[in-house]
Image (cartoon, rainbow, N blue to C red; front, side, top):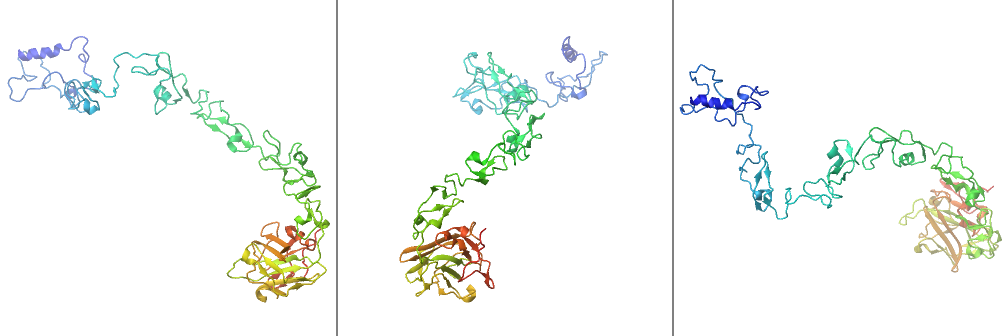
Length: 504
């Protein structure tokens, strides 16, 4: 009767309301049915003290399967045994203590799901996510255990709080209700028609302050639109500048100038222009004649930068006049006879002080008497270039006299007088100064850029007939590039009047 009683106890466990007793568990059959908690599945071989399940008790009834199903290998939380996958089970913590959890003492507890609870541990800084001894106070402005928030004390996340609370697709910030729960009413999503500035470029008809002009960086027509992904689309934007019509935001467009004229900017004539970005361009306006010294003018009517001829040349006297082009008119200046004029120069092709090349200079005497150069010097931009002229050099009235250094092959002719090797006229621009008796006679500073004529090897630059005095030869407009070929590979008029074109 011992086995019969045991079987009866097992069967007795399946009564009314006991799950799993009226039918076989889903997916369980044979050895898949777990029997943990029902005792041993079978006695040891040869152990007479343990009845074998299925032993014939001679009562004629069916005693069930010969063996109980295998219990399997899944851990059973609550059996007091620390199995794989469990942090603890009952009093079995696998040797861990509060110290191992970073606490300073106390006792570990094991939760119903076999996880370690450190709330009975002691912490130097009061740490641990455990219920406080007193319940939280909602409304004190401090988020405490059991509260989601309190006033402005809202936990911050590294991720979007709205997405964390409401799911993917939501974004924005959360608030806190009066009962210390999170307020997600401010959360939004793409398509709600509300522009979430930090998350969306736009939403529906809400596009913020974006304009087509900001998109293409020029005055533009059209308006941005918003796609279903809450991103701006600028397909309808097109530049308005350049269509020849005055559109909003443009000062002008091509020849469409509105009523703007050069007179509106203080000019006396000319044509107002329009830039590529549709703003006014007064570059073609003419200011000369308005009686005001505008940029680039040395005089305008009675307004002068300098009024005395001596300001232009130390040899001149009298008052300057103003030409119609707002440049000095030197016709009113008095020039003493015998003054020398720098009339032509052939600079070296490549400046190299260690290997001087052929170069020459021409001086003209527009006066009525002979001029001796015995007390005169030639100088340039650097002090070591200051050199006296060849002794005995003279220039007769009305003559053109040449000075140079280099062989006839280097120069294309033989100059009247030689120059010291230290003299140098550079093809990148230079200064030529003539002084006699310590007094400046003439000075010209030329350049290799406009408005000066191009400086090329073997081609001199010379002063036109209209600029042949010590005043006008200071201006780049008085010079031209020589066109007369006086020797193969050389152009100029050494020793004679220039061949510069006569101005209309």
